Image (cartoon, rainbow, N blue to C red; front, side, top):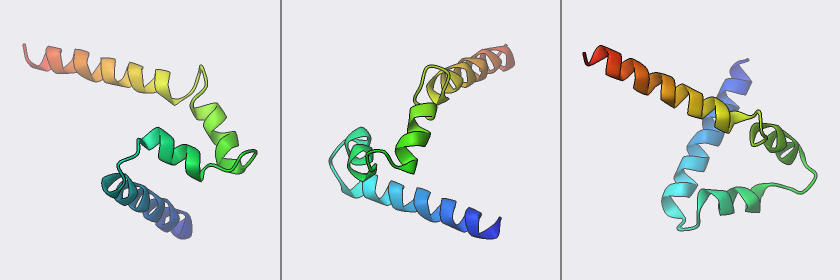
Length: 73
């Protein structure tokens, strides 16, 4: 678990640094580092699919916005 945490942190840090330095879009950079038929592509098919991360993030942002309005009353 410690190794996985370190690897995840290094990956996120490296991705953020690359995004900061490179003028290409995040989508373009992701395409360039995703091997066709590889493990990342397999995971992205799920995360970017109809029931994947995007709809979950939309619901989460809507819930946070609703709660923010409630707290502001």
